[in-house]
Image 1 (cartoon, one colour):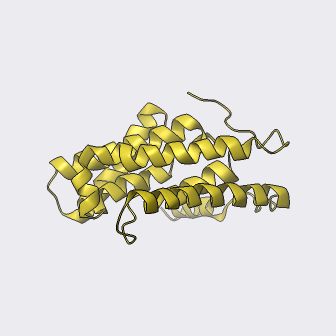
Image 2 (cartoon, one colour):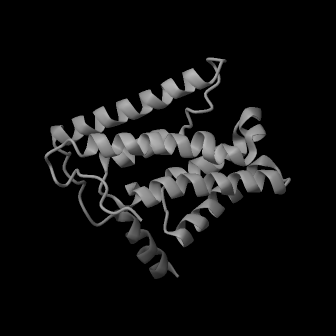
Image 3 (cartoon, rainbow, N blue to C red):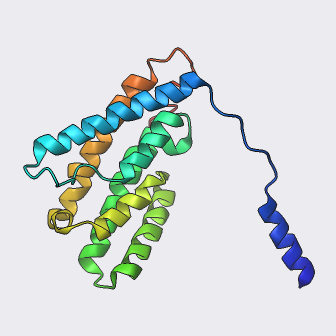
Length: 186
């Protein structure tokens, strides 16, 4: 037993060194793309909603998506299928569970995130911020819940499409072929 514990804990040491910092040009492209995308979504939020404190369009999971599609545009998690599908499917999972499973918020939150992961795996749309989108569908305010399934399309799909369009424009401005986006569509 002691030997098995030692083998197990040895796995936690890590096997590689930290990768080097990315070049300044890549960091600046990431900054610029995420700045524009989040700003446009914020403007959408302001223009569509009357109450300035209402941040329905400014879903937190899109901050994490900005990191992926602008700082790691070549990653599988960043590709259109994953980005768009991961958010929309995860929102649908969260909404469905909220509507039909009347459980404590803690267990419902856990079921939503883990179920969204399963759905994203089966549909090959794994996008880590999708887990947060499923969670927002559960813990979001009354306005989120009042939208029901519309939440998956307005704001989630709309925000995704806006951010994706900006990623297409910004990521392909660079002359670096490793920055071009996307690697594949569907």
